[in-house]
Length: 437
Image 1 (tube, rainbow, N blue to C red):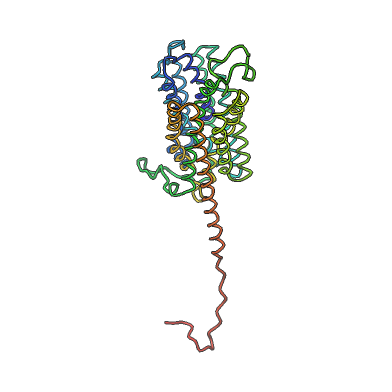
Image 2: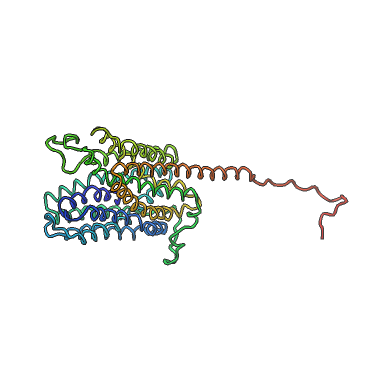
């Protein structure tokens, strides 16, 4: 559910704010709405994950349902009639950025954690299918938003959309029952750090490296995602005749090139990575392969794309690889967590997302600073370098995990089971004393 709404934030509301409702606001102010929503989507996951281990699914679901509905419903009151420049930025930030972001975090860890526990043998494919919601949301929700606003106006259209959001979250709330096969871990003292942070996770080197790698993925990928429309405009890509189904009559005032393939190919990337992860029984290998390919694309296609066809190919392929990179982290944690810590899976996953949140916010800002001082090509180089470092960290995490597994196997082989000793010969009639007093 939260992943579907990511598509609405990224491709639906932002364009309407920029071109209609908040035209007097700067790009930084508008980006702050989406960045805050994404930041809040990840940051509180450390609490959500621990509550999931305690089987507090329904509490999280109800709070998420309430905050999401209120966030989008109250958004409809942030302008008079939704006419040009009628939006009030502070109220838009409060509703669309703050309330909706907090509501999404209740479902973000919830969705992947639940399916992984319900389908332990097919956990990677189950998590992959669940993650396709982000790709589907990137297509469906923006279309619904544009249609409803065009037909009924902004206030009424957003109220209808908030009802759709409420209905979808209600379904997730009702059907999101916890798996009873995993032992329940009651929540300890609220103000005690050990209640929310598992120190065993911090001492687990493969997991620590993986968390750093995922943080770099988010910082690198979103650096390109946030600038791809501007990149297409600077390069002169994305006129209407270059878009499949375009009219061919005039250049697009804002390039629509990113929308021509990436949301659709994201679904393909998410499903394909899940299939390969299941086949290999190792999602981190797939993760490393996709980050390496994405780094090559960023290094070579971003600065040197020669024409519109190459640019469209870049958006489509990078969208597929991005779908794979963003859908695999929960599966990676499920692979790395030791068997004896399976009841801590929600906590380990939540800790990862909270650690990732800061870099997801800072990474695109670093890319924006590089672009401002050195030009648009530096965004691609920044993303390429970030993802290449990620590949190395993922490979290192795999090596350490396999080293641990090998050590366990060798240890079990050395520790042979004790056999029953032969019955000692009778001491009767012997010259030895059988018992020492």
